[in-house]
Image (cartoon, rainbow, N blue to C red):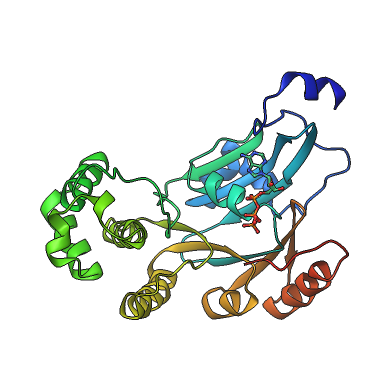
Length: 267
Ligand SMILES: Nc1ncnc2c1ncn2[C@@H]1O[C@H](COP(=O)(O)OP(=O)(O)OP(=O)(O)O)[C@@H](O)[C@H]1O
């Protein structure tokens, strides 16, 4: 570690797995090429470790994490504060690459994190942002513009610069565009809903709909949200992912972890 400290910049990840950091491995042995062909469509993490260098010490954000999500599955990651939830969701959304292990997207298209509050250009109108996004994903811009406008009810704001609109507009457009693009898989980093109650109601309904037609991974510190939206649950604590037979057992384990000395309440 002392050597690493001299080499890495703040925020940079190490290539080293931490000693003794063994998360529960869920069928990771099926992830070789033959296994992928057998198991078909999936998104998976395969022995993924992510570490950051932070103020002269190495922080392990994820420690040998493996799990698989298949179409139609709704997976909850119940995580304590600072346990690695955002890192895990960013990997699943292909916004980051692990230094150790693999992220596998096999025949499933993946959305950006559903409530993302970055990703659009503030100096462009909302309409042009959506047009640009449609082009990036090879979709018809008018269809996506209509779908976002219907969902988010932006009206005249469509032709205003994004930077001149309330900060929540970015999250609403990112949410609506992700749903409009009809991905196979949606990674979700918490339920950062806006204060717009009508939009929240629609977003809740949409998550229930996505559960039926796509795969989701929801990472949150809110047990109630896992119960509401997920069929299976894992607990993420200090970078280690553990699987539990039932959601209630996961919640019990999560509460034990949350009660450990030094733990803060997760959001
Ligand atoms: N870019 C970075 N540079 C340095 N450390 C980082 C970076 N990103 C995350 N970390 C550290 O990695 C650990 C996991 O962070 P992460 O944001 O993934 O956890 P989280 O569960 O989403 O946190 P929270 O509960 O605060 O939302 C934390 O200790 C965090 O400080």
